[in-house]
Image 1 (cartoon, helix red, strand yellow):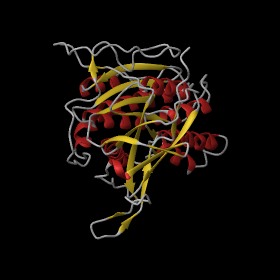
Image 2 (cartoon, rainbow, N blue to C red; image 1 turned 30 degrees about the vertical axis):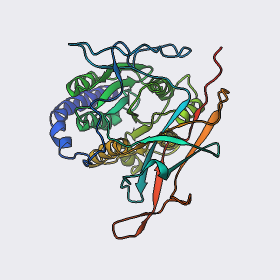
Image 3 (tube, helix red, strand yellow; image 1 turned 135 degrees about the horizontal axis):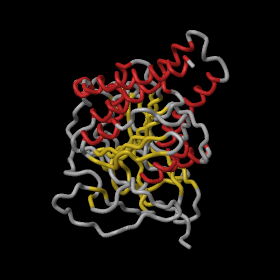
Length: 383
């Protein structure tokens, strides 16, 4: 009897502490801002605007999202998104970094070579201008690992505080099922109010695969520099969606997934005292690998912070990656509507067609890597 009472008392204490911590979060994270870069052209708004549709509005999976004419902005109404589906034009978001993690700027269309199933494609245009971010936050909020909740709140509140005024954010939480706390908005206060609804978790399930697959599908029609921020232990309990099915969705998605693994410090404490022996230790290793796979296949990154001081750097890295990415567009030479997966490879090439050589200000050659999604699934015939 004492153990449940003690656990409840600790949980209430955690919530109270987080409430006090939140009041100082804005000042803490505003001190560390992403590095400002001069964009080539800054759009005045994010993705195309319209009235009446948002990415979070529930829709049947068996039907395509409706395509309505763009509505004119109406005074007194909050901006929402209009979505466009173009099955012929393929877009690939590419992040180019050197070995130290610095972004390589000023690349032009001629520097990129795209191969689809090893067939060279003609790049029609490359967009590199800074634009507002569109981020769907998917947050595990369950009683399964209540000890991890501090990391959860650190990541959620801290990321919202790091957003710029023109960025869009939505908040989705999940345990046994997912729940939309907030549709896309630029209002940080509204986002924090949504996070404030996360008080006492009600269930001990973490159906990660169901929640993530649902959000991936919803985000496909969104435009702009979009991403999913997954804040999770990486553990799935009883999802109806299989792991391999989520991997396929992530692999073919145009939305990169940035994952923050929670509970690393708590796990380290338990490991040091011999409490993380099998099978518990293997469960968390598998969970970490799942988060890494979601991020890698979709063109994002996974982070596993052990210390509070690491969070601002993570937020800066995610923001900088989205703001410094190149978006490539091409029309596939494969016109078959067969529903098959098509593998994408992006390379940097020089005028001679060989691998592009990148040097620093001193003329020293830099090693670099490209991050992008692995491919996409071709459309099927319309019946």
